[in-house]
Image 1 (tube, rainbow, N blue to C red):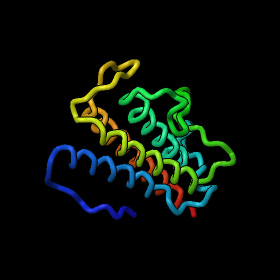
Image 2: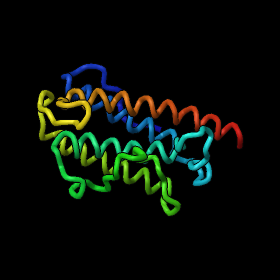
Image 3: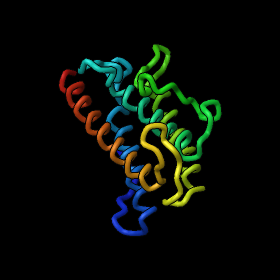
Image 4: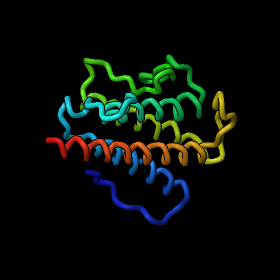
Length: 162
């Protein structure tokens, strides 16, 4: 489970970064410790599984912090995938530990990239248009909190079936 301390006061940026990291960790916590079969268990008709949620989170981290904010080419991103499946597609050879480690590495790179920007600095999203780092933080906090909720429900169903 999460070992991040709760930060409840401080400058806006510290609060945004902390809440994003808490939600990253909460999402990881929903899958960590599951067996490979449990992590891949499909309980809904979409590709949403515990391992797929983590893989998608790495995709989203890359997209917003590597592609959108600094405008890196796909080749300059660490593991960037085409947006077609949103990063939910998990290959047979991928493991839960490997997908979690990839997400943690990607999150670390996202933190390093974001550190070079001010909250009001902008990048361009191909559909949304101009977005600030502040928006990216808020969007990603929302994204990861929603998916951590999905992961909580999936884990509850999986562990209840043991």
